[in-house]
Image 1 (cartoon, rainbow, N blue to C red):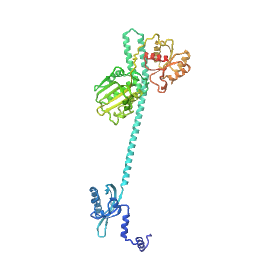
Image 2 (image 1 turned 90 degrees about the horizontal axis):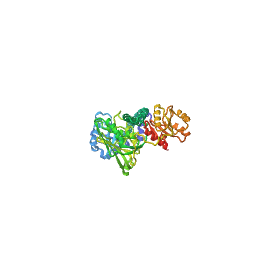
Image 3 (image 1 turned 90 degrees about the vertical axis):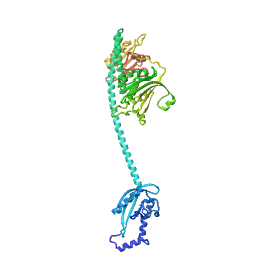
Image 4 (image 1 turned 180 degrees about the horizontal axis):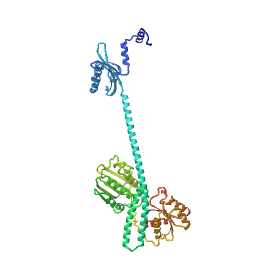
Length: 548
């Protein structure tokens, strides 16, 4: 309609729209059809007008609601809020918009938005006109969105923390690897020094028979060198460069050998008790790795008691039944040697007891402990076809039990370094080539071999070794270090020589395993000597190689 339209025309249009309906009646019908609840209250807060949407919202008929107040239908605390907000509108005469809670007849609480204003009729009577918007679903959606956002933020924070922890563990692992490489290199060089000293002392002993005082001194020196060898083995085991060489081992004897080390390393605040079921319990394990695993368990028990306390070690033979093996899912049925280490420390809660063997997991404060000790023990147990179990009670202590398959029909022979008598030396009439880049080690080994009757030739590298073979003609045994100078290695040298001399026997010797060539370190006819080695060990390796 144009704004310049004649007023009489507007009146005519209104009459056309209304037809026979009264304008007030039509307005009431229109209000009643509106989807949002609309109501009118008098100054006594009683409903005097409301549309059908109000009835639908509250669950009551129009007749029931008219003339009643909020206190007749809502909980008292809700009615009080409605009353106060209505009073504010009557007092101010302005418009009031509020978010409120409303409980309907079915007991459901809804969130509503109300807009209230005052209407004053010609007589000066005030009426409150209100419009309600049900925003329950909107608020639920907002809460769901907020919860989703909160959960997402928590996940982001958790993931960020995990990434940060992974980065820290990676950095720590890199540091540990660098330290391990350093330890392995130091141990390798130290092994060469020990080889020279040990070999020289043994040769002195052989050539000065009859001097009891000198013999006693050399035996003491050899015992000290044996402890030095054990130390380098631990360093190599830590660096991951120790060759795993399982053999029949008296577990009781090995742990007794560590007793003095543990007793000296524990302060006066600790007591340690050892219990052995027998003097002889055997298992096929790498002695150095078992020793390292046991020390890790003992030190872990010590660290769980920062103020001191008792530590108990028990070594026994146990029969693992099929039922127990099935229930543990770790043990194998059969006879086993058990090494049980018990403390009375802080214990491990049930939520984390399953994590103790995971790499880098530790309950110690930051900067204390690597979280690798127990994972190394677990790895050793698996490698030895054994198992490890843990039980713990908070504030009462923890027990770790290492199980190893027991050897029950094997007599152990102690490797004390003594020579076995022979009708004639095993090297008589045989030629051997020694390839070793350390001159002093090569000289000492050659003297060993001469003592065993071999004709000995030496070379400092692979090139000289190949030239020596051309010069010598035929050799019976190749004894070579795994890692030679100038980038050569003993495995490739052996393969080259065996291609031309298929009957050639060979023995590898090393201060630590060359991880690049692990597949050929030791086979049925190729023993592996770990430096420093005793004369008896060299003789045993040669006997094995020559007997194939």
